[in-house]
Image (cartoon, helix red, strand yellow):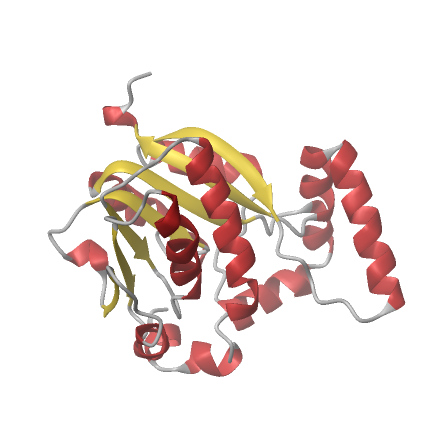
Length: 240
């Protein structure tokens, strides 16, 4: 599966490497970190892609007391790191390779839209947990909605274009993180605003928003369209 990313095929299928949603994702991550007063000395983004989420998060948090924080983005895809390198900044760098194969650790590990791409996500997360000395922050697409399961062709398309090998709902994602050795501290739903041009799409989106405002869990489980931001810490370091 790694050939999808190292061969350039992923870049061909996703020419912007999801840059359009990056500022929205960074804002959601920043809200979670600020709400819990997380203040790391070092941040590592595992599977950083083209690096715009990390750069946006760096730009949001650096003026908020994070001026001495070191930031690193890692990805196995050469094309991703080529693009990300243009986004390097003060105390922010990007590296090609598998961070899990290094002897390094970090007190904040980011894993944004990553483990749904992996053949063995639990093994990956268990190893990630051993290298996390403070907190880990995840964003997990919640593909396993009832609506998506009623149209399996959509799930097949997610695998073809985005490489999603696993499809999660909220409880499955949280259970996986806990089985891997993390303690969940907080969660929040997040949705990148979709680009909608047709009237029917706008009406559907408006309905989803109204339902979500009243019944968030049910709406996400039935209609989908959201991801889950999850702040964790390794269970063995928990003070709880």
